[in-house]
Length: 124
Image (spheres, rainbow, N blue to C red):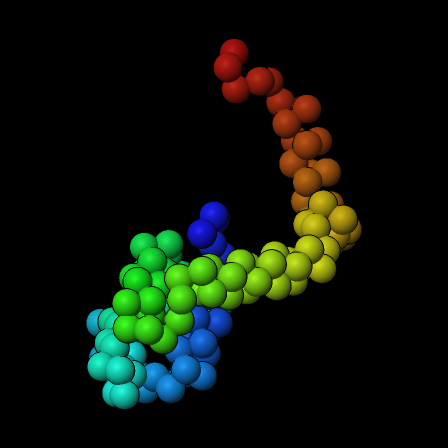
């Protein structure tokens, strides 16, 4: 797994689709259990759109592979495809530099620049 970028929402959906149940302990963790195989995974609470830390992904990968639910290579492929989808959605966003400044901000910056050019430099 090179530079994995998968959101908690994507990982959660994978586990739920595989038959895991989810139990949330508020302000603590999320517990996923797969009763038929006895597989259990506890993860810290993430917001749905947050990127899952690599060591948490490795924990899930090991548990799924060890219990015969998903081969490690298949998990890596899933993470890679989710990462590509995540990065593709970011490229559709307009870069900040292309967003024209609001008129109020431009006027404030012009006024600030004028004040500075009228006064002595702060280091003298």
